[in-house]
Length: 86
Image 1 (cartoon, rainbow, N blue to C red):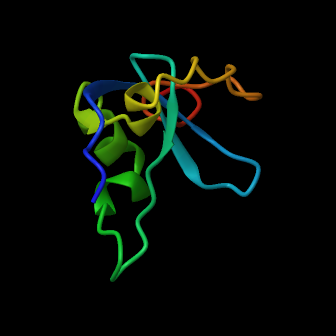
Image 2 (image 1 turned 120 degrees about the horizontal axis):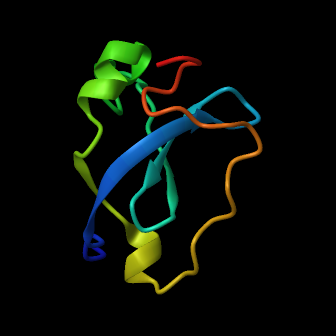
């Protein structure tokens, strides 16, 4: 089993082209944050209040572990809670 990546704080959110939520991490990488029961349980991602509450929470960044460069900025403006005006 691969080692988890280093912890990186969530600094914002945006949606991808398929309308899935993506967290922007402090390192500049993006990571999908899906709620897809029963496989992935992240009910906090389904509403703006939950996403705002998770700002600053660390996720393991496998892209950092692999030494990948930062991801390009999202095509759509991102908001801290992932909703316009949030």
